[in-house]
Image 1 (cartoon, helix red, strand yellow):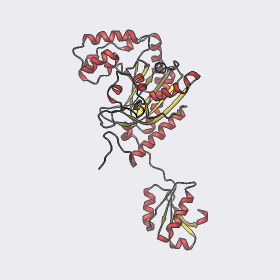
Image 2: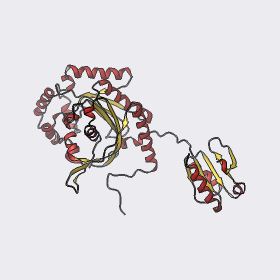
Image 3: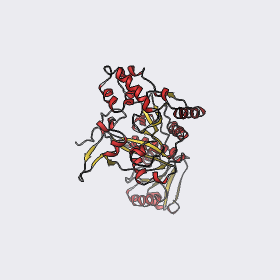
Image 4: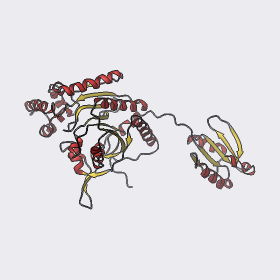
Length: 403
């Protein structure tokens, strides 16, 4: 028997209901914040992610589904969503037009990594990207948006915040950090040895317990912020305080790529095990120019959908539409005709086997229909149809023409 590839799952029935509900909630909240849907291709040039995500990242170094296509192009399945949206932003010359643009997206991403709970090779993200606003108020707004999404879904969380500084305060901080790493170079892991040479602040994100114990004494970027970055971070926390939005400051929270600056944040859940980050984002004011666009301030976030599914509190499904059933074979053609006619204006589910009234009522209840409509020999003789409202429990026989 042929099975799905490892780490690539089918989405069926109950799980689909959770996916669908999540997307409806997330898209509705994003719309209320003034964001508009954008869709980018699943397949992009590999160079896009090498330049945006970075050669030093595990995504580019180990996890991309990369291949040469029949035209000789070096391509890959998208491992994340931001780079594609930024590429579209530049390609369609939004950077040259100026102004403010707010986009949201959702869809599958692909990374070749070890599958585990909530972490698959084909996974789904919902994300937003905001272009053209340098104010830290937009950072606060996006954090509040994530909170609105999770609150609506009934998901508990904690927020972790940090500032990554800017192109003025980051270089001197890196010098302090490299000096610290060099002093402990024999004690850190091989990954940190590599990161030390490519992107030193990523060592702070190392998951090795021994490394983390060492980095507890590392210099903190928060202590090296310039006056502008320091003021922005104080403004951000003040706005969150005003909205009674609780957070903790995590000085080891990094994004690790040169174009990230200032705000970095993660939403954490204590209910999903070791892989406990359920959303993350930050400001990336330099990415557009990294990809040859006109310098444009930008900030965004992404939510990993699979990690949330078990946490989503589904509302009780509302009854809607009609269930049509026949009590004898002679009524089946009429039921199909009436059901098809009803589909012009309402949801209609048609049962194609003759059954008893009790069986039809049970089926109508199972599919959460509002009305159960049944025809048998007696109804045909009256040119009528028996209908029961499964909410009010009212039942009657009405003329077919008045259905």
